[in-house]
Length: 114
Length: 112
Image 1 (cartoon, rainbow over the protein chains, first blue to last red):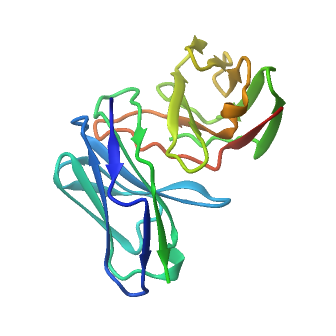
Image 2 (image 1 turned 180 degrees about the vertical axis):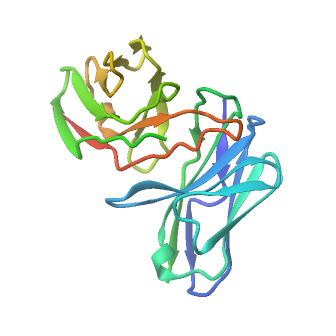
């Protein structure tokens, strides 16, 4: 059974803290993604990675960075957390095939910055 | 990725067919139409995809118009468990993969 696992279901952090959100997939997928989801705004792509150490910005990369040192792991980093980064964060992975691909999502991390 | 437009919300009676429309008038010839759904507090889940032909699987049917500018996801016998947000995406995977740009989707409520 395919699996994308996010390290935490709920997180509470203080303003200014450095926050790491971790995501691991066990499907040997080339591509991994980070989204945030906010009421009325849907899912918005923050960053994606199509290979180890490779990354591309999505729609809303400001205030975030990512790290992909190993194929199975993709980390989202909030360098200095702010209250407007309170959100649901979703990680996904997919194969690197051309044409059509299916994205598999984790359960999400609900981050609250106080 | 082509922009997609969906109604914000819809209701459907339990046991009836739910027909969810999507407009993708700027879709290019090689872009697939995908549908995902997200049940509350879970990550989105793939339902179905298509390119030109209509498609059916155990979850749903996808009807794509001949000009490919719109599509309809059909849940043939909606149940309460089908209450979810449904996302329509038009996309093609490049060498660097498929970026899957989601929008705000359609919130479907199945009514007993």
